[in-house]
Image 1: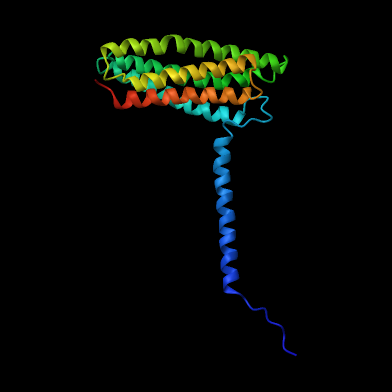
Image 2: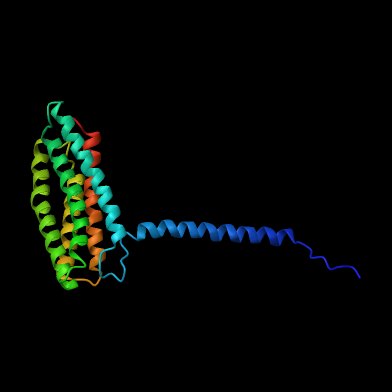
Amino acid sequence: MRPHRTRHNPRKKFWRGKCIAKIERERQESKCRGFFYSLVRQQGDTIPNINGLEVIAQIALGLAGFSGVMIALARSSGGFNPPERFRLRALIYASFGAMFLAIVPFAVFGGPWPESTSWRLVGVVMTVYTAAGLLFLPPAAYRLRHDHPESFPLPLVVILFGTHVCTFLLALVVLFGLSEYRASAYTMALILLLVHGAIAFVRVLFHRRD
């Protein structure tokens, strides 16, 4: 009696290989999406995401280090003109603000007080800081626009003003608990600070002299 031999179907083997490759590709894509989504996704949305805050603090630290290098270079090149000084102030405000606000939850949450008190503390700190930026930076940019219109085009001023307003509104959400997703609002406010810092970074790097 002849032993039974299994016949291999090349077409079936081909489609099986394609399915395995597709599953592996989707798995890798889900890992990439999960990394960026972790910046705003919270654990139960009751406390800020620690991993996301660490990433934001590291990026902000890099921007803050760049601002220190620019100050050191300015001492040997005659200093900054008014538009450059404003860009550097905006860079320092955004970078140090994002770094400081990303560190605050590490000291506040987990204390002997209730979680609601922790949210009030971080909300007060963020609201005060973003309110200061909203009151000083956009008006200064508008005043400089009259003397240096080529350095402060209207779309750029509108974008800067919009980021400040959105950051301040998110800080109010965190302070007063206007949404159940206050942890996501806190992280999004930090991301907007990084966006503001990135704009200032590009302007300082590529518009050294007007």
